[in-house]
Amino acid sequence: METIRKDLEFLQRKGILFRTHGGAVLRNSFTDVPIDVRTQEKIEIKKAICMEVINFIHDDDVVFVDPSSTALPLGKLFSFRKNLLIITNCFEMMNELKESRNEVVFLGGKYSRSGNRTEGQFVSDMASRFSYDAAIFGTDGCLGFDGPGTQTEDAMFLNEIILRRSKCKILITLAVKFERTSRYQYGVFQDFDALVTDKIDRDLNHKLKVGKIIEVNRFDTE
Image 1 (cartoon, rainbow, N blue to C red):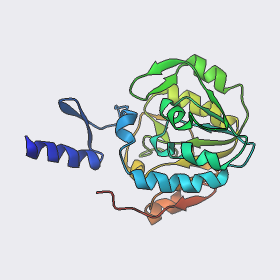
Image 2 (image 1 turned 90 degrees about the vertical axis):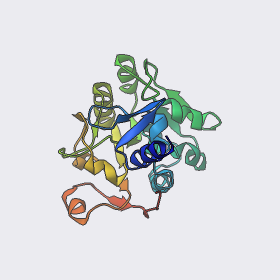
Image 3 (image 1 turned 60 degrees about the horizontal axis):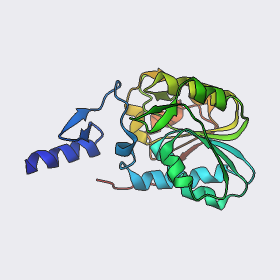
Image 4 (image 1 turned 120 degrees about the horizontal axis):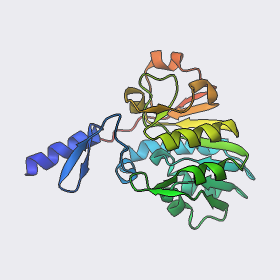
């Protein structure tokens, strides 16, 4: 049992599967990985990514943050900006913002247990009523796409709405996501003003037609 536990932990760190109570589930393009699993992955890299992202946020901005585990460290960093209006449909982000002095709007809708977020028509309707100075997006996988992808149809439609209504669009992701597939593509790389990630392959860097690519220092998380 001890050997199996260690093997499962190793495979989870590699992103091949994620552990559940009493077992494990293979990670693939049909799996919406629970956010409580994703929040435990590559924590230091995610913090470094968010340290770069906060430089794109200015006082008085209206900011959208999607339910990306990579974006969660922004919750604390927003305290360095004044008079923000922060909009999200992510419960984990709301926990990070519960003591914020900035104004926070939560997009209400149907609850998704796996993503700990809201989804559906109500979320899209609310999101379409704002104009965003900056929007931060994650991705579940990009392999085979010329832009970021997501595992759910609801997330695809919502992100498309936000992209159309945002002045500055920032894509944040771990480099490993370029090697993973997902079901739905919600944009193309040219849509984004910046991509913030850890070290990516040089050939891939040249192929991505993003306004600006920022690579943070790579951390040993094994």
